[in-house]
Image 1 (cartoon, rainbow, N blue to C red):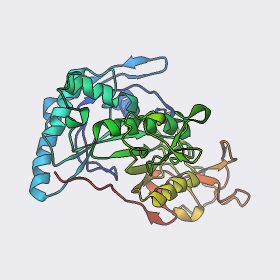
Image 2: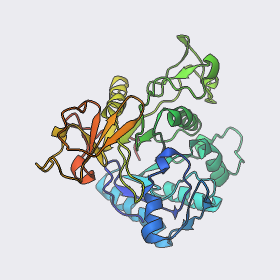
Image 3: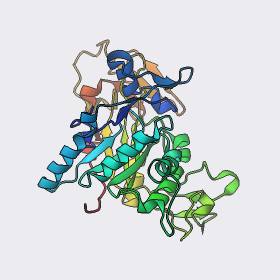
Length: 360
């Protein structure tokens, strides 16, 4: 439950506890839920029609492994990234407060590690951190940021524009309140195009928009304050901003078959990040990949293993037909080749950028 990982954007994964509840389309193909339901059975995964599910604390030996990683990192002068939690959600409100407190005590005790706290519930970050670590009893002149561990980054999953409009402003509000190591997005599985330069969920009826990559907040071209955008810090018209964007396609998980990720959706995020100088990381294509020349497939065009998907501008159409069909639009079609073949290059380039981190 806590070892080195093959995930390209982290060095280790750590799970203080196991268990969660499906709450968004990105959860449909949850590998952690599939793992529990088919192999480990340690918890019951929650979701629509299933209730909240159950949670299970991992062993004490497992929960203390990061102390060893920290000592090694200090000796080697490194700052490895720890993905927490791959089988849970740190800011799940079904988790006992004392479990979360123990995790944050561990994070403080491992200053040479960079903890990546990825959540689908960014609205809970400030509240649950306060409950676990502060108890709502700040001393005079203190702020929550005075207690937040400087080696902990916060991130949220955004799979499409709807989730970006909801989750990114909440993440930025948490960044403003806590001053984490950095704030990041995991756009995996990417299920639709995302514009991070004009978020709208908190922008009904012409209220200000925020560019999450530059920090600019505008309404009708006029700079506005953070509070007008639902961010509770008003020291200037510039809001907090996202420091790192990760993207990737989906993999099969049992009965749930992966949905394709259109290359233009990834290119859009790549180009937005490049324009803003924000590090961009492409993790994987998953089961589907664009362009025939991008994977090394068998020569037999009738091979039954492969399936086509074509984007009509609104949804995917799926085809069981020869992989070399000439009537499919190569700019909008994908082939199911399997994760082992699809790789992680975009237009022939591997995007491996990471954010800068402060000194230990």
